[in-house]
Length: 344
Image (tube, rainbow, N blue to C red):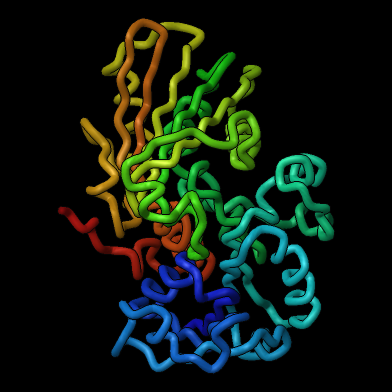
């Protein structure tokens, strides 16, 4: 059994990690930390876990966590992991330990870009050289060998899975337009105008135009493979739903490719992927609660439109992190994740 700890387990992402890991045959969750609920039973905070665990939230003690764990997940707001991850590796010394950060602190390789979009100084730039971007389907070998995984953001997961087959073939050129709509759980557990139900239930709006912190993340990963110059524009939208991210990506190819050939291209990349499904119409309600990403492709001339739907908390968060952990330890990649969405 792999012993696992979660730092920051009271939020929505921490709750999803617990939900998944408690049903993982190869994992024992040994510690879950909280700043606000120390000494409180996990099931009193996460009511869906009643009778499923006797764990109690503890205060954060890095040395004790490292001593008891082989894997540490960090489910924290941005800016906190850059302080905690160096302490984890320092406390581990020669002990092998794996760290999976579900926040944004180690996703961007250039600390100056991080500081521009996150508005804080990156205090652990040396670790950026050893961190690996945890998009499972396109980075397996590096994930297997790494001790620090930067789990992708929810918007980038939906966008990159929609676009990377084209980037892998160097077919992207010029403007890449990504429109994504997210549910209220993407804003976290702390109530705000963006999540408060009366404000959101009958509304739809765009936000952080030209400044969303996930935009450079998408650009960075597409440019790893696509050699043509591209410029990504991400427009995030707040949608009146709780879970899900629905992405529509628009690209103009350098040459016309028939739609059936594009579908064959995507099949070539995804037919053996357990959690990618090529469908006629992606829907957030169909993937809710699951680790699946549903994708569709349509084209007219050189214009291509790709749609994807994921659960932002699972494939866009905790599920992908568990998938990465499975890779690292040589488990079946789908272990602990083999469940469909809840529909309706």
